[in-house]
Amino acid sequence: MKSKNKSQNKKRGDFFHIFIIGQRLPPLNARSKIRAMKSNLTTLCYLEREEKWLMLHRDAKKNDINEGKWIGVGGHFEKEESPDECLLREVKEETGYTLNSFTFRGIVTFVSDNTQTEYMHIFTSNDFSGNEIRCTEGTLQWIEKDKIESLNVWEGDRIFLEMLKKNEPFFSLKLVYKNGFLSEKFLNGKAI
Image 1 (cartoon, rainbow, N blue to C red):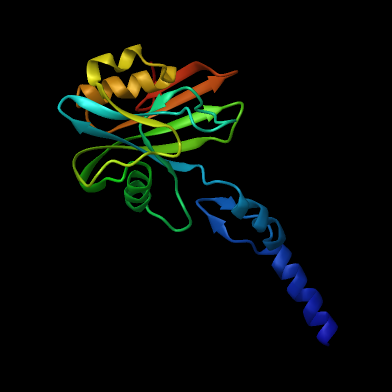
Image 2: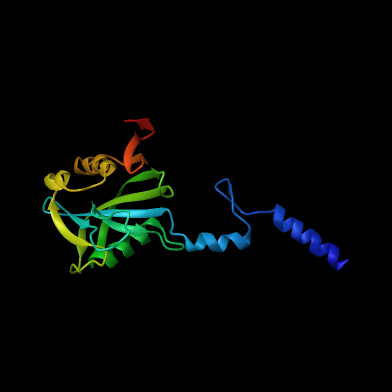
């Protein structure tokens, strides 16, 4: 009788899987591999002061997908973090600043043939306190908004940076990269 129950339990374990947003999770032994992967959920924040944004020149890490690019500050969600919690932690870690308030501006879906799809939550803030620290991921620099276009930024970033400059309402932007080049772009579900 015991062996029959074990056999039934094994079959049940193989048959019943946890479903999240319509997707079946892999069996427990495969989930440990997933935990080791970085989350594909990220935040990116542009701190604003005197018509300037605080930009991060990614010049400190080797084998960095953003090497040589200028980006905002942010990073990957940690286990059980909300977008707000990730944002506050990443800004503090990378800049030394504490955000007193911030605005959730949009979501950017990055699709690439080189990496997993990334869902980036875009924020801005002009209300922060503290002292700027040296960032281990690159060089922080306050750049005039009108001079951002002359920097080495991702082609798709230019689209949402212009939207942020114009203070456009919340947006959903999908950017598709092939071989490192922007091949398709969609704003609020429509090709642009």
